[in-house]
Image (cartoon, rainbow, N blue to C red; front, side, top):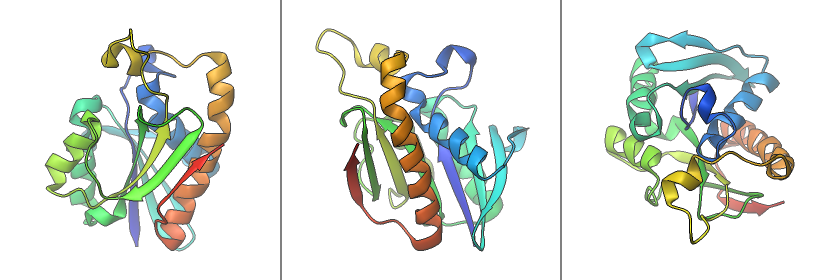
Length: 186
């Protein structure tokens, strides 16, 4: 069986290590663990890597479409590889969760996340698995768009490192055994 794992984020150096790119950070760590290399794939509007987890082929993607149009890339991948939404796992940031928190679940609303909203619109369902990385709620005096596009500090990156590692393990478990909904705080 084939699975597609899509990290949500924004392309470009100026967005590296921003809260909105937490999904990219996890995807990059997964590709490294699977010894998979990214290639630019115009047909999918994404950087794509292929790997294996157990018996399963895994397509790992970082869309170029920017966050708000992530669904175009995820949908193109699902269509090409002929997979159901249940076989597409999304990794995204979540401002409702404290930094150091990981949530794994299937289905649910977009929760105000434009990347998830785009995927739901393209798939016409919310029945896909997701791994959410807590990036902290926005401070009262900071607009949401400025908050999610702000870079993690060095101290925050230290707190995020074990969450990224746990997220990679959760993705591997999800492919091998299915999604088990849970929230973990490190």
